[in-house]
Length: 454
Image (cartoon, rainbow, N blue to C red; front, top):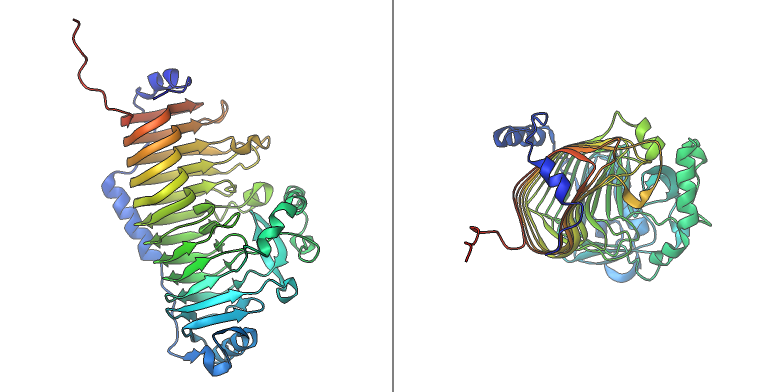
């Protein structure tokens, strides 16, 4: 095992045990998690039920079910909500499903929604793209300013994007940079119009300003962009969901400006981040500092894809009170635990508690950086009050543990304990930190008693 050259000096400082980090005891952590879960209210759905077949839907793989969905949702809306059942079958849809209040969209086992790729079928809606609010093509399943929303059942939501929307990826850069310029220059959102002639891919499922949300048991595949994006939402339960989504930027779950969240028993298999906790980008994000992403519980998940647990890089309104436990990877992930910010972001990542995680193979097991892509200037982020305990990894092909702060804004108050990496190319690289404690961290073979002089 090779130790990074930055290892020696920081570690000498690490063992000057700090008093400034008043981390929660294990009992206090349990109580905090309990209090978060008690705030989460599952959606209230009226008893009304309608099958998509009753409004003309056909699951034969070729019929266009757009009108059948719109008609069924209109009928339920007039009744104050209810459950829209999609029976077993393959349902093609030319355009988005726009949800209503008090709705359970229930996909029966064997039901698959397959969305079309004609951009004329997707109206412009108020949305967000990588942390900046814009008007763009509607996400395939979309809800705005709603309450009591459920998407349930063992069916599949298939974006059918690999041969269509994905082809926009090489063309998106000019539009991406334009959104960032609009953000930095505070261009009014109603002037941020994309859509025709632009190449920003829509999300598969997106809810904005919604409360009391349940996403349970469904499978998500082949998304054009992020799979499940919950923006400015509260009271979220995501459980039993599975993924087979390998296109570019196919994040599994993106939480942004969202709070009071439970994610459990989710099986990831994604081409990008499995869970990404965000809170807006740069100037616009800092202007929304009253709505950080917070009070998030993640447990009993299976990770696979690019990165497992990510905070950032868009986190300018702040991320706090995140509790992750009892999860593992079922294959390679590039980075296991990944915090990323830079000098454009501002904001903070704090009060993060992670325990009982296991990984097979990673490039880097733990990576905290305040210098993501080396971007920006003038808005240093703060990473502090982090506890990571009881983490095991078989192999890190890069560096086991990386922590990178700024000289003027150090990463501080970090506890790493009971961490084992069986094999690693590099051990630990820790720069620009203060009050970091490492205890029972073993990279490579554990040292035994010193050998005697012969």
